[in-house]
Image (tube, rainbow, N blue to C red; front, side):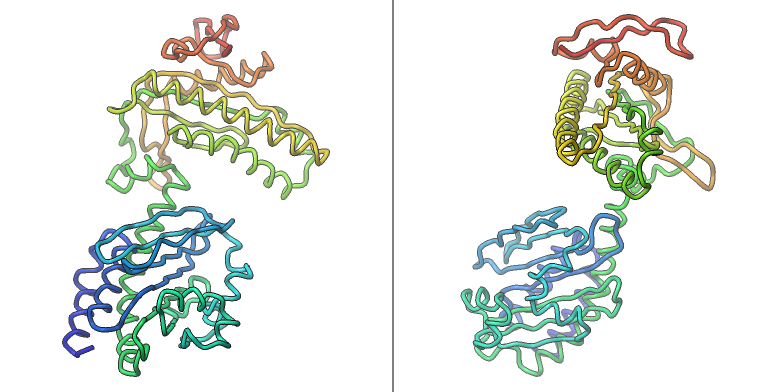
Length: 411
């Protein structure tokens, strides 16, 4: 690798790579450039621990065009995607908490970096190292000769590491290792910028939802910055939550409350809904009408999500019954109407949510579902957009509303 090439790569990392859209693009550009300079790069792995409530490690595996895509069979996978490039492919995997305690990681050369080594260098075809590290047998099968791994930073809580695999007959020479060590800090700075952007986006997704998160990132951040949206509304609440809380240890209550919400959240997102708020054991979600989603489709997806949530809840209660734990019951109200969608709050605390009489009425309908002891109750405005069959449950008075509310049960 010439001094000019080293300068070119440094300049690319500082001036161009940071403007690329994603970590896979940066990794692909870096590995492709190294390959052009005679490093013989066949595979690279990037692992980054990060501060995130659901993700412990972000893992990226780049492979040149001659290597088949890696199969991912890991119980800690939170997200998995593949990026295709002209010169190769990159597999992106987000791993949830617990992934760093697995035997699989402890049998990887990366484990030496976790234990404190700054860098490691191995000949892949050495019989002893193949016994110690099963990965080297796989690398040898694709013609790899050398494995080099290094820390990208020294932050133990948010440790970043990278490995490079070469198929050069002599592996990486001393000059190449020295120049890699000069390039790695610059690469690390560029990756840190991309990581911060990614974490910022995913954190907003987790805490306020994908669509609100995108709106905040696009500049919808002023108090009172709202828009009118038509949507199917979901409002649900657990029954006898106070009684159950009084009879359950706090940490156990948090565990089963999370398990309960998982039944609902997965059902809602599986049907293109958006969870906006948790209030104790209650939850608010919407299925917005857009250019591509009609009122009929919005209500149909909300109904499908409610039915799926009730199915999941039934399965979960059966598992609880096998453990001699009490079953949990809830009520889901489905309503349809116009809401104000956006920033509400004070100067020092804002919430991206929906407000309006439509939301208030959805909450009242959920209360009626409790009185009727049913798990799903819909308003007449919601039923009007559904092709599914419903039967009238009756007309009921609701606090704050002058007219009686027509409510329906799905057949």
